[in-house]
Image (cartoon, rainbow over all chains, first blue to last red; front, side, top):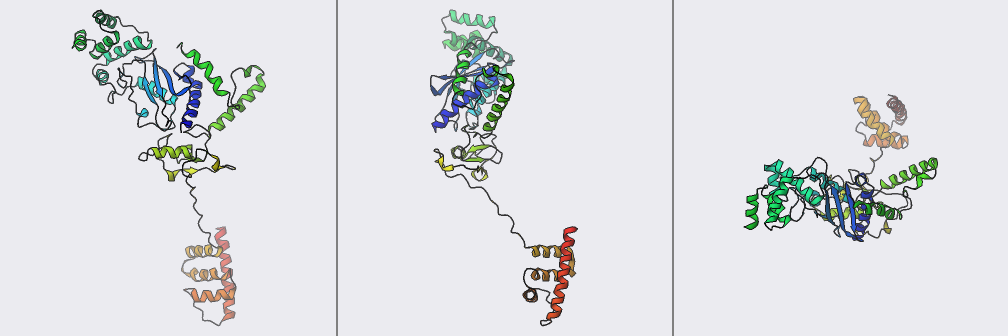
Length: 199
Length: 215
């Protein structure tokens, strides 16, 4: 059974490498050493989204029962998205769960994740805080997601206002990522973020 | 994407070398433009044709191939494993159409040796559904039906008679006709008349057949 998995992963690698998307540096796969069960993926943030110009690293674990069961995928790069946990990077996507089909490939998975970045599903959230912000205050969600992209994924859009608030917390001895998470979750309200951190 | 560099050059070369038929790295086209054009096309064709017979699950050339009603090709062991895994939600791995053991059609290529598949732990793939053709009516039966339909009330007697008459001898037939036919109106013993009658009927029958054919 794992024989099929090994052979398939090899073929899927070739498929991804030959694909148009890889030529355009939009998706990428790397094997972790010679172990086909651990693969690192990377997707580019889709244009016209807050994730534009960011590159998001993914951890892909291939089960022995692949392709009859879906690969286990999570974001290694921190991302602010309703369907991705801002803490663990766990992804809520149907094709990685019950809607998986054996004919799907890693390329399909990567492209689906890219599509998920472009079209979030706030009604089926992985991260309730993010999903809530997405629904209640879309503009703030967008700038927060963009800021996370800049901080974690190499995005180029700066936000001096958010920088200032982060630095305020840093000066109080708060760790940087903790400050970012608290501020993001509290709609960038300094007082509430402080309350959350020190309560 | 600086990290892309180490990945791209290394993988394709490594992966393409085992498959001899696949097009080589990009150096080839420089040699001779005319010949190479043809060569590349050929290789593309080869790749395409082998690609169209790949199992959608293991991505290898399909062994013990079956095709779903929705037209997707699989190895039977692969598909069987997929169906076993989700007995309550049997869908095509490609298009998610409903699929089941009974609804896949095995493909029998020529010279295939199904016992050579080492992975073949699955039960033998389902047999093809083979519907026997409708039993062929004998010529005269066909005629008889035609007569019933077309000839109306008057035709009935003659055609029943004709059915019996043709394949066997006249006399046997005569008896059959007389004993079995609903319309046996002639008393036995009038053999000359009978022969004459049967000839008449046969003539009419032939005429009727021709009429049916040419109409």
